[in-house]
Length: 268
Length: 272
Image (tube, rainbow over all chains, first blue to last red; front, side, top):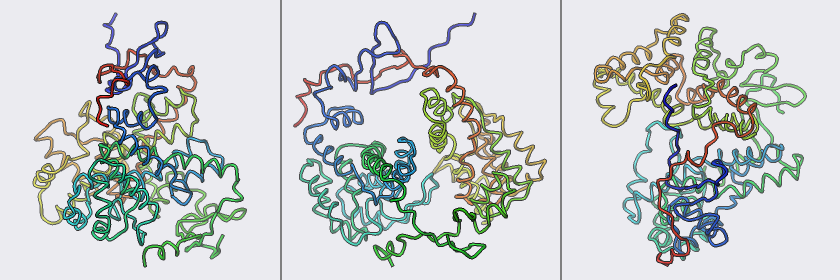
């Protein structure tokens, strides 16, 4: 008989579970970073406090809770024009599974145009430049990083709107609201130097840039911020997918196509 | 033109050279009638035609098939396959299972990133050789700034897939390309320093694909379903078991290494 193998184990600094006496596969208690989730947090902590606790390992201050709560509201629905929501609606209108609608929103909303990767790169930029305007100018003047990656080379400064003319009103409203709440340095500085920063970038600020500053102010790493941003934008994708499912495909645009190399010379 | 004027030009209509469906009539695929002209293509042939716009001769297609076949392992312990198996066990759908498995295959430790990094390294190396640099110098300077992908393996330095794929390349007379020669030259240099740095599958596939004329973007797209055929068996097996029976984790499987128990009520010491 062979020696029994050491059981396989998953290591975590986040979650502790104690088993029910009659079943090792059922948890009697669950602790998140030391706090009893079902015995104490339930009914006392808010959803955004739990989010912050999960990611950061500590309870947020009241200001941090308010800041994250406000950011979550601003990001909750990118709206049906957003490409990630458009993707979710393509799932909904065709009667695809709920998960596939969210997967579609995540995949499209993961990229470097308004997506999770843009948020990640923007947070890196905030970490590198902070409140030093000269550093922002230097960074924007640097040639794009050509190191091979799973991602394409960035086509615009992250956190700014490549197709914008001026700062969009919701971006300004979000920045104003978040800067009033924040007790950390970036958001108030961004509000005070918005025009300088937009001049340096040559583009108006985007909501992703505001979110990136807020998430750095909240103490998140770019990796954590990217995950959170992906999550926080999903509610809108979900409801628009459900709505299009209900409205049906006859009301959903199919658009015309101009085929430039049709062997029969036609157009659908 | 930029900003809203640029976007306005693109509203409500799609311009394409890739294709279109004429419902009830026909479909066009990269300038060809799919049914009238391309119906005899096998699936990989159509896939790479869609990616590159080029027709690959039969020998090259056999090599592309082999690249996919030789690394499709239905081992549900492997991370991407495990996703498919977990989906089967939790009674999700086959499509969600396979889509998620493929998505996680675009990883940095294995799969997507090492492949495209090796591809990029060989492209740069060939350019530098053409400019008169020696492989030793190139490797030395490369190692100053980044890791060289395409060599070495975490568990064992031997890669069981290599002799088979090399044999197939030889049999098809596709083993004499300049990039494959560079890949072996690099291996010779690396092995002098570290006998574990033998070429791995990512390196070999990248070199062979470069010799077949793939660009980096085309290669990224071609390699994406490389392990796909191993995934459906993983999903099937776990979905045929009792639900939840795939590698269940008890509370004892989880080792907690975080903050000791504390009270939410007593967190009042926190700053306001």
